[in-house]
Image 1 (tube, helix red, strand yellow):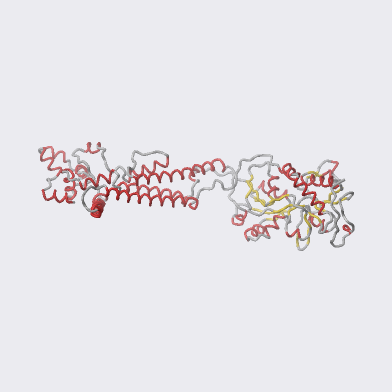
Image 2 (tube, rainbow, N blue to C red):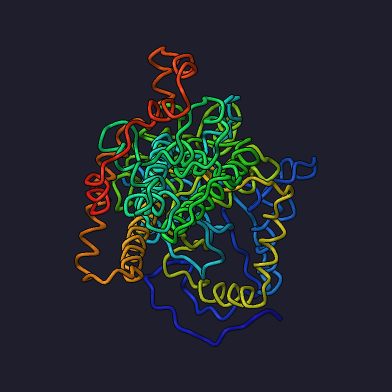
Length: 551
């Protein structure tokens, strides 16, 4: 009966427990030390077990089931004892406490529940084959966010909003600039035609421009204010005002009646639409997360942030594995967490503090998961610590270690341990909460790549503008060298910039209204010929016409 190993010789130091060869556990009686901590071990509170807690039948839970299977398969009997301080085992001033002390004092043959393996404990006792693994975690009660009238602005940080506004006005300026520079836009092509056209109307416009009476941009001159307002053939469609409207409309997914015609202008507008698409998608996603996930949240993303804030208290249970691991951590930030945190006595005390105060409890993640399995308003904070093994503890050179290890390995391979973990650690409530910080506002670092891309798009648009100018020069049919064509166009563009862009485009009629003169009354008393001469000025001379044609 039972599971029997091949015969082996014990080579450890003399101990009454080891004074004979051990082949199996048949007929042996083992003392196990245990503490009650769900779900590893529960005490049966029935009247039958009130004074009989050494009886294995008065205990249940994950560890109790594994112990019962070991006793059944290896054919031994056992009883439980409890350490007076109800601790797993820690070392203070060179002295051990808890279940480890029971092992060292010879009161128990093995620890009856898996405990965390660390180097300090391994120097005092021997550990079996690992039963499971666990990692550190921390839990805190979530807080419901305060009502915010401007919640829709929380998706981006303030600096990001400023950058978005800045690039919007920059795109407005560039859109208007491309409209004036491109030879394929309405403004640029019309201005160039007005500057070189030899017809009498254009000659008169150029003459009046030199006299300071009007500007080339005025396609028509009106002696009636109403007709001027009704006239819609305006060549500067993409002025700063209209460009701003075109750019701003993209944010709300709307088009504009003003759109560029040149390849460079259209590429610039496409680049802006691409930028808006990404920004709007990120805004929508983060706003959705803010509205749906920020019902319960905390301001801490990692336990190393705890010493830098004052909103939350935090602590660990004394003499547990987590305290040892934090104190021995290579990173001083983790050691600071352990040194400045509160030292609690029991798990019940820690759970009560988490539920009643702004308290962060740091412990094994499985312990936290189990004790808050029916709660959805508590949030686990990541620790980013390496997981560690949990195993049974035995005395150093224990003759039972190999037999226990073999059976635990069998349980591991046959999924017995896995099934028991799922049984006792199963979460009874499926919460819809997500990791902390998933709805954090985007900062500049998150979007800087998008702004760099927009800079490259702007550069590409001006390269396209240069290609447009070269193409326009190649289609010029005048029989003059290419260099002279280029210099002529540059001279005309320079003249346009200095005389057209920075002056108010006012017709004679507008000037009359501004100066308070009612020219219509004066003109009514003159003949039609004199009215036209008064309004348009004297006709140019032959020499002036020839000079304007040479320009």
